Structures are given as structure tokens and as C-alpha cells.
Length: 214
Image (tube, rainbow, N blue to C red; front, side, top):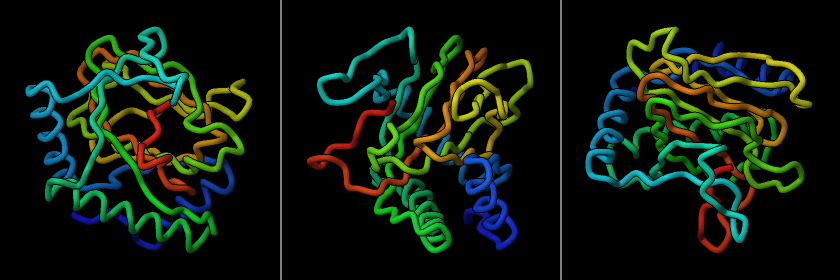
């Protein structure tokens, strides 16, 4: 159930991050692992453990359903399935550091559930120069996703003037992009849509607390 870190895929990923700042990675993670992760999210949802996501951090953290409407739960590595995924991301972190000298120190991630009508308007995952979140990953857990269900990830040029990609949230696909330079949004979904959003960081979580997602 390993992340597909064959030489060819790693080289494609690294080249894309350097040249354009983002990469669409089909079949990055096996369906078996994605299905196991999806089952966890569905269980958490049934048990009411997913929480409404906010924007900003610290004193500026707020719930704003005009900007984002997903619900989240942070991965803590307390299940075997999560441990497998987090180990695979640790290997990806090693590859990124070895090739691009990014100095990535840790990885944080959360499940994200978008129900019918939910969205997340255009934003950046980190402010330039903050040197906290450096590389964003989004793994999709949705089997048999249909083109008319919406929920795509839209990647924009650095100045937000152009759409560079519209990425469908198909199971096993991963989007990887530079957190400080790639504006993006999640279009309204017409079906429940599940992903794992994660960030490789160049510093530790402040005072042991993970920054709320932007």
C-alpha cells in the first residue's frame, strides 16, 4: 500500500514543483489505503467528531461560512491506517528535502469532508515569508467520482489572474503545490467529497498547537 515514489513519478513531481509550483498526481495512493481512510472519515462523521473548519489563526481565527464550509478532523496517528499514510508522507518529505533542500521539519494533516453545497473560496495556505507551511498536499478519497458532481480543486497563477488547472477529486489522486505561491479554491460540490489536506512545515507548530487551516 505504498505511495508511488518510483523514480519516474518523483522526478515528475520535483520538476513540476520547480517549474510551475504545482503537480497533479493520479493514482498516487492505492485504492485499498484510500478506502480504509475513507471508512475512518465516515465513522468520525457518524460519531459527530468532525468540526467546522475556520480561517485565519490566533486572534484572527474565525468561522466564516461565506469563505469555507468543510468539516475537519486532524490525523493523530492513533490508528494503523493513519500510521501507514503518515509514514508514506514522511518518505515524501525525505524526497523533497533531498532534492529541493527545503528544510522541511514536520507534516500535519486533517481529514476534510465537504457535503453537498460546500466550498472553499480562493486562498493561500501560507503567507509569503512566514516560512511555516511550505508544501501542500491534498489526497482525494472519493470512489467513482463523476464529472458533473463538482468539487474540483482550481489552481490559479501566482497573481490569481489565470486558472492553471481544474483537478477532479478522484480516489487516489494527490495534488501537491507550494503553499506560499499557489492560490486555489474548492468549487461547490454536489456530492459528499472527502480529502486529506496536509502541509509540510519548515518550523514546528507554535506552542505545540497546529495552525488552523487557511
